[in-house]
Length: 248
Ligand SMILES: [Zn+2]
Ligand SMILES: [Zn+2]
View (cartoon, rainbow, N blue to C red):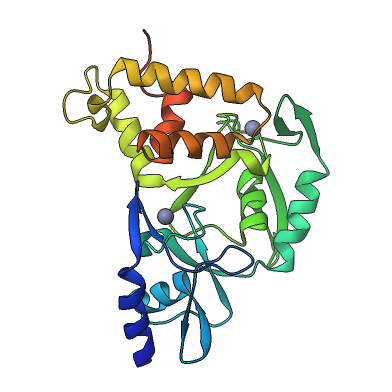
């Protein structure tokens, strides 16, 4: 690794603040809103420097993306390297979008679905058919890939929806742990949700209900609520969709 990466990374990390789970750069930004820092007459993108520092370099030709969608975040756990999507995913995405119908704010895939209601589409590769989740195709197309080990989740809780504004990536492990907890009759004190009160849950749901009428993107609304209440996006998503804190 080049020496300047080490110097720069340390400088960057002196000018950040913690915001929820993000570590947010407080310094200069370029025209497209990206955090930047000047060193040896050159402008460097701060999240790219931190990625290179943490992971010993950036893969050839890769863009460094944020799972948190916060452009100024330099939390290395939120950064991932994306290789620009192949033309194949573009072709698949076009086929998906050509076979949809709007339903409320959702865009519903009209083709075949699996037993859980997730749309799927077939491609012919290496002499055989391969099936792809339609929401995964759309997410990968717009975000240049899907971070390894993460699931594409629905903010709207509608598996056949392929509206890009309703899709976000979440932690598969967190999801399955959540499912395991829900299987128990009494989630108990270990459940991270126990720290919230019903008052907070009602406040979050009220904010969600009124924001839904406003025509803002569901993803944007849930992100704003997550920030306001200091919660993760996954948690807010489960609260507003009633997957946690049922009843009352
Ligand atoms: Zn972040
Ligand atoms: Zn939707």
